Each structure stands twice: as structure tokens, then as C-alpha cells.
Length: 441
Image (cartoon, rainbow, N blue to C red; front, top):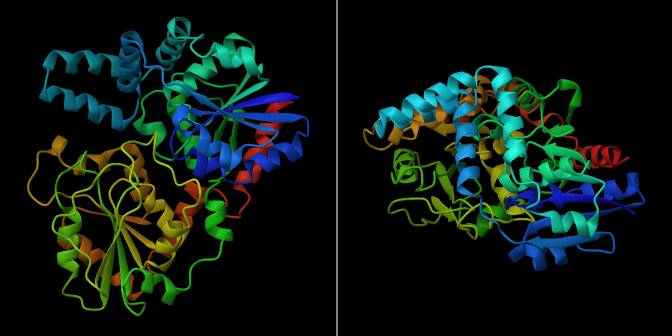
């Protein structure tokens, strides 16, 4: 049997990839293959129940912290990225140390030159760990390593070790915003998978990947969004104690890590005078948000609180995100901070809005506003499908026409889906499975 190692160290990989048609497709295309899923030890038992079989081995991996040298190299790669996001981060250092800011500015200037980016990767490969996970290579003798997140240090460790052993590498850019927010990619696999055309353009421009070694597959977990049946409207709103006849605005608030401002409360109060509008505040899977004094109000406000994890390593909705999909399907408008939920909303052809403001005057680098100057947010807003507001009053003015006319922004949403989702045909997981199998042969 040929063996494929698949990493799953980010909490949502189970939902995003493994729970789609990827595994059945691999076995259909490569009947002599087996898969070893590598993931944090504490999730081994659950994933064994979900995915384990005679041909799927679930292997827990202990967390091995990075060394001080590796952490320093990671910081260099973060500030070296030739993106607007890294420039904003370098500027923020000035608040604490002018000397450090000048050092990171110099690193950023080197990062503008492809030669120095490639040199940094070679040096990182030479001095980086290539034996940290050798026991799994010795035990399973893989023919292919598929890293599901090429910006994550555990995935990079497996990729480096694979290359040092002559094992073929396949890597995926996990999410639409990673290329511009995670710094310079440390490693370029033999072949790279991205979800959409926009991501391909970005990984070529910022990540130095050869366009001929990139495959576009779409967003695998959206397969269920377009093929599953949604909850009936009356039944759905009854479960939240809301009115199915009213227009519904969904608010996805920022984490307290980004701001302590009770932004959802400010938005709800601004919408409250409109008696035909109700609100669902959808809390995040990771961390906590400040929603002020908001409490459920029948027919007016529901607070949807999924089980929350401390970080994205632990966050998991692998068994299904049907409820979130139902929320978006029945919404009329979706308001969020920097979040994939804006794209999720557009998948369901819903109007999406970014709340790019604090509830009180806040210095730029301490505000939420700077997030929307990052490449990923700026490019998303440029499609016209996601509106950016810089005050709560502006947000309400933007939302109201879209609640009255659902066709507003329709063409822009088509453009966003083409640029960020590739194809919404229910076959993205299948396409990825085929590419994995082809890279095995």
C-alpha cells in the first residue's frame, strides 16, 4: 500500500476537508492507498470515531513547542512578507521601540526582493528542524505528505522532513486570508493547492510559487452548503424564538482579543427602532466577544452561542456546521468583523457588511479599523460584494436598502464567488481528492 500523511493541526480541517468527499475520492482514484491523519493527541479518539477505518489511520501527535531560534525566524518571515498587512504590523512596532521598528523596516525592504525571500527560505530549511517528527516517517514510510496549512509550523516541519527524505510534498493554502496575514511562506511544496483564482494570484505574487505547480479546487466545505437541504423557515425561526416574517440581520462580533468594545450592542440599538427587523448575534467558535448587555428578546433578538474553544487548535465543528448554514441561508444581511463569514454569506447570495468601527474614538493601531486596510479585507471590499462601514450610522444606512431589495449587489456577489470560491458545484472535495491521488503516483 502507498501511504499518504495528511496533517490536521488546525481545528477546522476536519470540517473544511476531511468531512467532505476527499477520502472516498482518494480511495477511488488510488485503490492501493492508505491515509494517515496526523492531529493533536487530544483529538485522536474523536477523529478515530469520525474517520477511522481499515484504510484510514488516525495518529495523535504531541505538541512540540518551537525553539527560541525558530520563533525568531518566524518573526523575520512575518515582517518580511511584501504585503500591506506586514507593513501595518511593522508600523505598529513604532509604538514600542523605534529601534525595532527600523530593524523590521529593513527586513521588510529585503522582502520586496524575490532573491532575498528565496534566500530566507533556503536558510530556514537548512537550520530548521527536519527530525522533529521522524518517528512517524519511520513508522508509516509515506509516499506523499499533504500539508493542509502551509503557513502552520507543524505542517512546515512535516514538509521539511519529507523533502529531506525525498518524499513528495503537496501543500494547501488553508484560507482566503492566509497569504497576506500569516507572513512569508517558509516552504514551497512540490505542488500547491488553493481554493480560488484570487488565492492563486496571491501565492504567485507574494509566495513565489510557480503558477504551473498550482491547482485550484474550490472550497470543499461549501459542497454541503450547496447540496444539503436547509431547515424550513418557520421551524428555524421558531427554534430561536424569532419571527419568520421579519427581516433578519446576523451579527458576527469581533473577539475581545481585537476589541473590548460592545459593537454588537451598538448595532442592535441602531436597528432597534425598525420594528420589522430582528437580529441574530452569532458568537464565535473561538474565544469570547463583548456583546455588552444584550439578552435575548422574543421576536427581536436571538443570541446563538455554539460551544466555544480557547483557540483554533481546539475549535471543531467537524460533525456538521448545518446550523450555521441555516442561519446564513435564512438571513437577509450579515455583519461581521474580518471573518470568512462574509464570504459564507455571499455563497448564500446574502448582502455582507464589515463593521469597521469602534464605539468610541480609538487610536488607529488599537482600533478595529486597521484590519480593513489589510490586503485580504481591502481586496474583498474592492469586489463591491462586501460593504465597509466606518460608523454605526453608516452601517445602518448601508443595510436598509439591501433589506428592501435583495437584488442590490447581485452582480458583485457573483464576482466575489467567482474570485474566491471557484466553483460552487458540490465537487470541490472530489477535485481535491483527485489531485492528492495524482500526486501520489
